[in-house]
Amino acid sequence: MGGLERAFERVLFASRWLLAPFYAALGIGLVVLLVKLLQELGHFILHAIESNESQTILGVLTLVDLSFTASLLIIVMFSGYENFVSKFDHTDHKDWPEWMGTIDFTGLKLKLMSSIVAISAIQLLKSFMDVKAYTDRELGWLVGIHMVFVVSGILMALTDRVAAGHHDK
Image 1 (cartoon, one colour):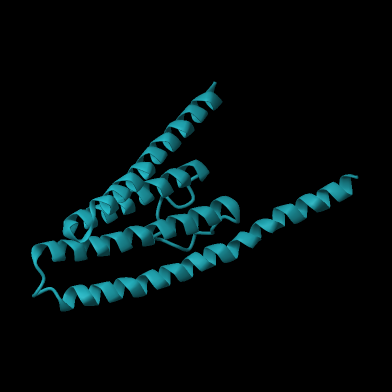
Image 2 (image 1 turned 90 degrees about the vertical axis):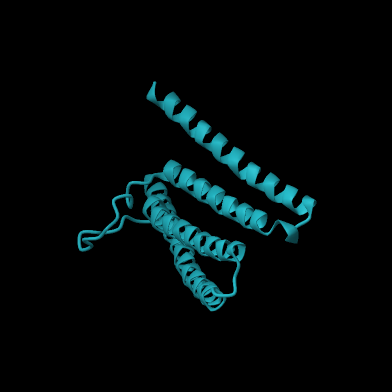
């Protein structure tokens, strides 16, 4: 029975490589975000002269939002790959970021949630900058959804803190 168990464990362990295409797809998503960034940047630059202050701030917030989303993809791609598939060999990379390879699954969850809260906050701010374009109900939903993300992030952090404190004993 030991040989069958070892074979099963090898197949199970090797199945982690099925995640690799998911991380590759996120890389493609990053390229799509870059295309969207270039579109938004072109629109932003072409309308810079005629834009009022509110429209300019909305344009900048859109660029920040896309940057946060792209950063989130990078965090998920690299940390997820390192945590679940395989370690990177970064000996040949002099500009290797220090955080890469040090984020565990708990840190990944918290960074992911923090990024989602930041993206949600930017979307909410963009809505408030153009408040006349939204009904009170729509704004209420946006605030409610944002608060769900904030509360979820706080609860997730507290849960991880309690779990870490429990493991230290």
